[in-house]
Image 1: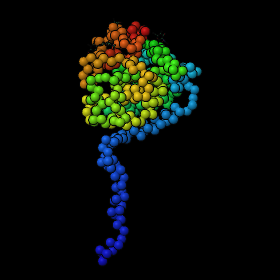
Image 2: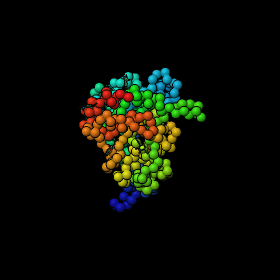
Image 3: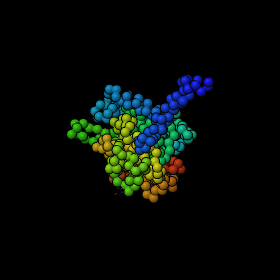
Image 4: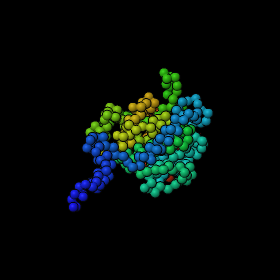
Length: 361
Ligand SMILES: *[C@@H]1O[C@H](CO)[C@@H](O)[C@H](O)[C@H]1NC(C)=O
Ligand SMILES: *[C@@H]1O[C@H](CO)[C@@H](O)[C@H](O)[C@H]1NC(C)=O
Ligand SMILES: *[C@@H]1O[C@H](CO)[C@@H](O)[C@H](O)[C@H]1NC(C)=O
Ligand SMILES: *[C@@H]1O[C@H](CO)[C@@H](O)[C@H](O)[C@H]1NC(C)=O
């Protein structure tokens, strides 16, 4: 009798189906349990985590190399500046930067390039050799991918050379405003803060940290109302230039950071208010070590008449010695070191005034 034989046998098919669908439950269930806690895990996060863990572990090794923890005095070799080029097109000002780097000796800097792999970026040659390009991932505006790329650059530079003491983020639209020698002296001699109460001298990070902007509330709620809570209250949410120069100690802080990143990596609901790279770093630094930061950036930008979140793009007709002098002016520091945003056609006039103006301090 077919019916009795089937009822006595083990219900293999339903049990197997149930077992096989169990993993699915773990994926679906959290969405019903706590919709605000959903984490969008980008598939490539895992590679980055492994990289950050390696860089973090290397940093924990006791070593007495220059730049380590940025304490002055332990200078058995000269500390270096790591220049982190973040680009999604050709390095249009490579010849100008080449001249800049020729002014500094090879043992005072390192170059690292993160080039969006979905764009064909050519290798400029000179100081920008193919081995300077780090393993990169796609970068997109209005997304946390620009933060990821900066963190990737920091981790690679930390791992590569323990003499890297400052980490300067630069884009393909950035130009130098001074000689290498001037930039080096500014970072290593003018950033020192006298923390006498702590009995030590330390370098500071040139991280812009601003608490007030009329659009700050929209930026804060870009991922949904109060989604940043409890990690980041509105009072703790800061804005600052995407382009910073930070110390080794702070570079380590950034690559070890997980708590804020869990929120900042969430996609925005409103793209108009989505510039996470302008908030993640200043917010983190303001929470972690506000006294260790200058609160201003060394990279000049012109926001006058900005359109669609883009700053003024300088054209070749605007390039002049007067412009360079104007861009150097700062209310906070002796001088800005870098400026943006310049269109590729500026290369010729910039090269023309490089020796007579830009690299003449
Ligand atoms: C670098 O530039 C400065 C300022 O123009 C100059 O005094 C110095 O001699 C230059 N050094 C090298 C190695 O080119
Ligand atoms: C900033 O950009 C505006 C145009 O948007 C221009 O008129 C002004 O001269 C620029 N300022 C500087 C210092 O370059
Ligand atoms: C310096 O501060 C004044 C007054 O707040 C402001 O008008 C000017 O634009 C500032 N200059 C720079 C280079 O930021
Ligand atoms: C080069 O710069 C000088 C000023 O230093 C200027 O007089 C001259 O017109 C410039 N030439 C070109 C081709 O831009």
